[in-house]
Image (cartoon, rainbow, N blue to C red):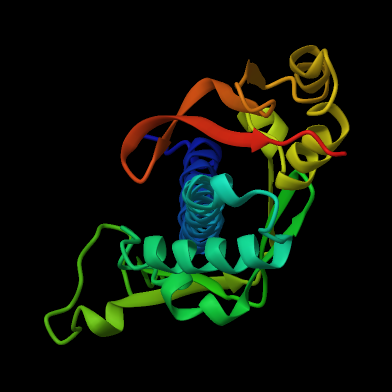
Length: 256
């Protein structure tokens, strides 16, 4: 019986080529396993840092509005004498009180970096700025150099040296603006200007309401010739945990 040597050679070549292809695929898979793991981890790091940034941005706006309303309502009856500097100081005090209840204890950013917080007040606009802080996040991933393809980890290899810690950090700048007019109020300067311009007029109500669109104005003439001017907000606000409407009573005496 004669052997088919050509057929045997072809089969051998086919077997060798198959083994080469399988080996190449295994090597490629091994090399790319770590790269894929790292790229996924990088995406997870940036996603978690983005979540942290949005959380802080939210609380800056939330605490800013709450502290602004609290300080504003506490000072509204004396709108003629309260300066922007006084109101700003009251807002800062209220803001620090709210930060003490900051729910994200694992972050602690606002508590730790209150010295880097700056509140600016200019007419209707309040700006809350925070910069110079560092946000960071890290987590463990498998070290692909020490983990075999079929998932077997030698008994001498501990969990600590079979994992790598990946981390990222960056320093964002926060700038949150609040507008009193959009909230439903007006600055004390605007109220004072409207009062001085309109209170002595016969149409004081219409004059003041044209200048203070968020308020309703009631003018009552008194027997002594003076006027009781009542300013009311059109909407209500949550102030120090209670639903309140703004109401300012001011007596205007006719000037000689």
